[in-house]
Image (cartoon, rainbow, N blue to C red; front, side, top):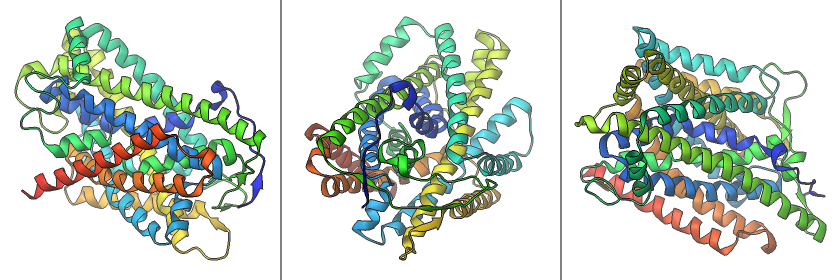
Length: 458
């Protein structure tokens, strides 16, 4: 690889950005639907899974960032150098896991609840088409996504904080504390009768989940962090100029000055990801779970699909005002839809880059923009086809996708660990405690994927 000097590390406030996009990838799945669903049906004793899941993903994401900071390219390039056919797996697993239109189906149900739209399938299709249009305009994809996700997050979290302040009691928060330690109402860690598929799906979506974790290396490049400063950005469909970019990156000489600068980069990106992704992500899960618990759990019985969200909105309207109930659904819809847009953006990057890697020849430059938009609209057409076939239950679609993604995480955890151990110099490799955490996460996802599969065939 070509060698250049590592750029100077900026201050914390100038580095904010990629983790907002990454947090947006998880807002509409685990945070809004899967964990609150479990809390509404089984109480808060399952919150330990959210804490463990998002902690695993923090360390996982940082190893993906480590590679991109040092090499100035995505981890998929590194995987491809190990074995030229890894792109086949990433194309197939990404398309199957994320092509299911669960977010649009849930969003259409929420709009129907708010405004009484009759044809939910038509609304879900319209939402998919709108997402494609949003991603097809603007100067660059990264700029579009950062502004979009920051707006939704900075609107949603304060609103949920206000609801929690108005509706919850001290006893609810005592239940949260013991729930984070795995103590529930009459059970420890897992309640009797819980579906392993539902739990594993929520666990995988305590964060982004699946191959989407690997997209963090794209955002390091797009923001220009580390050696990503020398990488080129994917332009939007209508942007002027050349759309051809180089897939392979550049690295830095491992001299004293560059190694000292890398330590500064490593400190600041860890802090950014910890505060935005880990802290705000866990806070959002807890806020929405405790709302579902205090409003729905004590009613008894079990809720189906995303009906617990509508029950919450109704009770919020009764306890505070109808306007707050309406705003709860409105903010929830925005979170869902921001996730839909972010997922399509990330998966289209993954699919297009791996497609070009699969066909890679001696040419270094490829039209990644064209590949991105073919992947984007291909996924949209697939989602429309699924909706027209009648598969419209959003929680089922999201849970099925999450279980597939849990196995994908098992695969790429092992690959990322091996990649950083084999390709990075000793001084830049992960510390021992990080290696241990990655190994535990690898075993955890592998074991739960097997148990879920075993429960399913039984």
